[in-house]
Structures are given as C-alpha cells and as structure tokens.
Image (cartoon, rainbow, N blue to C red):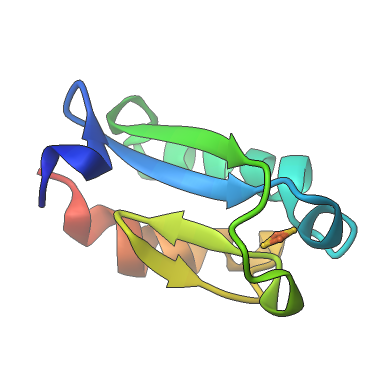
Length: 92
Ligand code: FES
C-alpha cells in the first residue's frame, strides 16, 4: 500500500456523498453504518472515513473507495461485511 491510501497510518475510505449516491442509501447513512461497523470490529481508530462529492460513477452508486479499490451499490446493511472482508485485511 502506498502513502496515498493512508493518512497518519490510518486507512482512508471515501464514501460518496454526491446527490445520486446519497439519495440511494449512500452518503451520511452509509458513513454512519461504516463507522458503527468499524467500532464494533474495534478498529475505528485505524480508519478515516471521508465524504467524496462524487466518485464519477453515479450510475453504480452508492459508491465507496477503499485504498483505491471501488465498490458499487453499497448499502448500510453491507457495512459489517465490507469491514470484515475488505477493511480488516488492509489494516497494517
Ligand atoms: S454521486 Fe456518487 S459517484 Fe456520483
């Protein structure tokens, strides 16, 4: 992993907060679900969630980018699985 995907050793996650994604279950709702899942996994202090204005793939939203990899059609209910399968393995 490069420094690009980490900030002060925290893994960066971008959650799209653009209009299309936010109106389909992304944005703040998805941010909150991911934060709760990170806290439940005990790794909230190792991950930084950022809100993106638009990730450029509105037709596939809600979109999330984790360490440069994109995930599409992500819903709040997916947050625990996303943390387990895609975030925990990327933590240093
Ligand atoms: S609004 Fe989310 S990718 Fe454009």
